[in-house]
Length: 101
Image 1 (tube, rainbow, N blue to C red):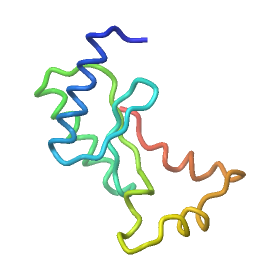
Image 2: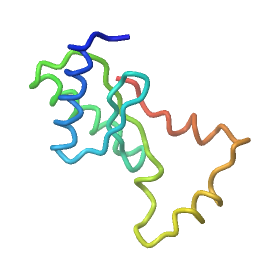
Image 3: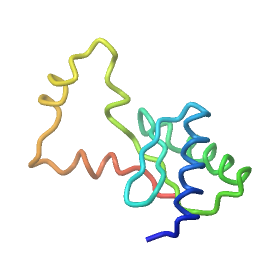
Image 4: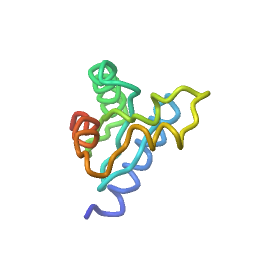
């Protein structure tokens, strides 16, 4: 587990990503920027690496696809989840793992 200083640094990095318009999550001690689809991963990786470099942030970071960001605003989310998600099907989880940076 990281030190308090590292955790504060990670929180500042996440705050900066949010200020730049990225949706973020914090998973297993790693700040992660979320994309709508796989085509955005490469550009997002480049962009958040540049943000990290400018901030002097040298800790872990990541990028992955979030299917929740891809759901149109007029879609009933509960219907979408029940139609597209299966606990028995782990392919969705592996596919959305994204790219560790």
